[in-house]
Length: 386
Image (tube, rainbow, N blue to C red):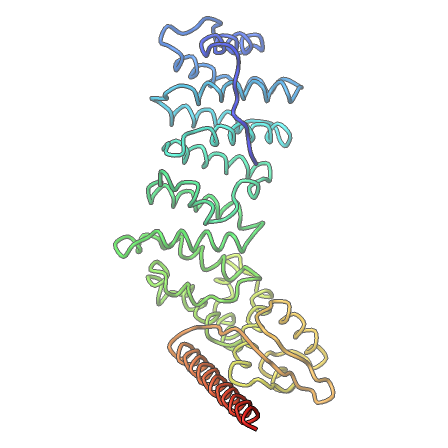
């Protein structure tokens, strides 16, 4: 979503007076006269009644009025900038949905894009942009991802507390529509805590775990255990549940659920979805140590019927974390590759062994080529002599 800068051919003072007259004509409690205190006070008074324009039926007229206010805001030094922006954002938030809400969002987004890159006010505008975007279902038109967000504030980074507040808002508006992106936001949020304040992030850490477990596309959960706020949860039920999803099998989850049914449901987690994810994770773990699995092994470990094995493997393949083929005649599943659920010292050692073997094979191939090349040269030399 982009918004061009707004310009008018009259002075800011005259522009403010025209806005005063306009809002007065709509019944707003505002004087038509300029403020003796200057343009900033004019702007303060105008913003206080700007939502009156929503009485108009013409969207283009409303857009023009809001853009006019934005043009004044970006053209003067705002000593009370944060207060004015908060007030403006709150007024725009009263726009009836959805069309006028989108008009308001575009005006606020235009304000954001016309502030200097090093302006501290950008954070406050962006926060309210996200709030308004959530109301009209346009969050993904504004927020493209964590990396893009960091670039937005590269010239004037907000404080850790401000970013934590923004990440919480983003997680809240994303969790029901894009769980994968919501998980990334929560992980980024937990990364803002240090050893000194990680103990205060308990609620955020729990939300992060729950979001990751509920995300149907999130299977590599091991990195969560390394986050400082998550480590502070060791010994709690939610941490035990995460550990099961990280490294244990379906049977462990079933036992956990039997003992903690109320807890699982109180976190908003679906037992059926948990079972589905744990079956996939358990299959991946089985495949790590045994690339050829029988139907009997799969049905026993994953608690499914033999007739459902093939459809289950299809679901596994959809994750793109496993490559496998089903042999119906022999009733086996041959796994050619699988993602490791955890990546610890053992996996690093395995990777090292693979790379060393690859280097050795490349060296042998190189030596063989040298031998062939030498033999060809010798043969060519003998032919010349002959």
